[in-house]
Length: 360
Image 1 (tube, rainbow, N blue to C red):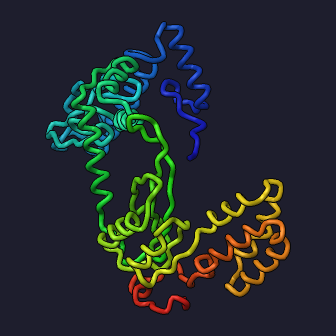
Image 2 (cartoon, one colour):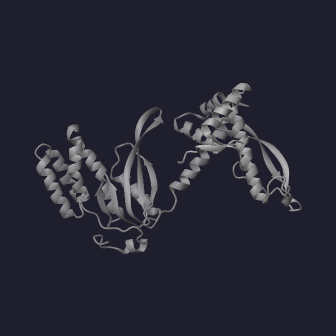
C-alpha cells in the first residue's frame, strides 16, 4: 500500500507533509482545549469534515456542477440544503450534514441512505463475536469504550447478516474443472466453553486462468478419516466440479482414496512443503540448511528419472545417518513423483477431455 506523504493544507492551500499537518492540528487542539477523542474531539471533527467533504463531492458529481456555480441555474435539479444524521464509526458517534437535492434523486455511496453504521463498526462487532463475547458483552464494550448505545438486537442482526453472506458464499457454484487443488489445514483457537486449538481445513483451487480461489472451509477435530474427506470432496463435486487434474495434499488418513473416488483420473501429489517439513523432524537442526540445499535438486528436477538420480545422491550422503528420511521419501515417492504438464490458460474443455494426463 502506498503511504500518503503529502497533503494540501485546507486553510492555506499549501502542500505539507502529513506528519507536519498532524502536529499542527494537535497543537491547535491543545491551544483550544479540545480533546483528541470523544464527542467533539479532534478525531470526531476530522471524521465529520472528511465525510461531509466526500458527500459534497458526490453531490457535485451527481448534479454535474460545483456549489454556487452559475452553470447550475435552470438545470432542473439543484442543492436543497442538508439534513442532520448521526453515524456510528470506529471512534464513536459522529453527527454529519448530508446534502439533499430538489429531486431527491441523490444516492450517496460514502454514507448511504438509511445507513447508520460505517463498515468499521460491523468489523468490530464481528471481531468481538469471534473472540467469544456475547451480545450483552459487546453492547457493554461499545457503551464503555465509544459511548454508544448498541442494542443486542442490532448486534445480532450484524452477525446474522454476515452469517447469511458466508452461507451463500460456501454454497456458490464452482468451475467445471480445476487443474490443481490444494488441501491443507489451519490451526485456530476456538472458544467452545474453553479455548482450544481446532483444525480448519481449507481447499484452494487454481482455475484454468491461473487464479486461486478458496473453494471452502471445514472445521474438524483432528481425527478426520475417509468418511469426513469423502463428504467434503463430494460437496465440492456437487457444486459443479466435474474434474480435478492434480490434488496436492499431506498424507492425511483416507484423503488420497477419497480424492480418487470423487475424481478417478486425478493425480494425488504429496505436498512438497509438508514432505520437507517432516524430513527436518528426523534431522538435527544443525543440518537443516545443508539438507535443504541437497533436497532442492530432487523436487525441482525436470523429470521423474532425474529426480530419482538426485535422490540417490541425497541418500548416499545422508542415508546412513538418517535412514528414516530415506524411508519417508521412498514411501511418498508415488505421490511425490512428477505430475502432468499443464499450461496456464488451457480451456476447461481441453483439460476435461484430456484423458492422457501424461501429455500437456
